[in-house]
Length: 195
Image (tube, rainbow, N blue to C red):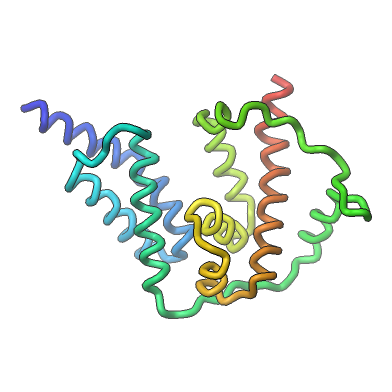
């Protein structure tokens, strides 16, 4: 077995280990298991066909996720059918968000100090907690958040893809951010300060 074969085998094992998380991310965006599998497969093939393009300037996961991100964007842009997003306001969700603010719009409690963001983002456990927090969001709210913050899609493009108004998109993004902030405060940053 040559060094090149050993390196390719190791790369293949690493890619296979991250496959379930990549599929889960793609399914959140594409809302279709078959399309998600295809996007992940295309991303993995792109890495395996030209492994020399991975320069090691980031982690392999970051590199593969970047490729997958563009595969998902290509798929979203290629989709000609319109998808509807339910926009009916859930009163309990509104009440929960309203409880975070005074009548004058200021927050009831200041957010907890989150420490050094760069160091926190480097921690693998943070992303596990973030993923759990995203899973707790309503699926459509999580999807629009990921489209904006992870896929870096413009608001107009998101609105066109989801057939919603700009104001509706901003409301959903606001709700997602508030829920994620609350979840991370409780499950990550609160834990870290107590520890």
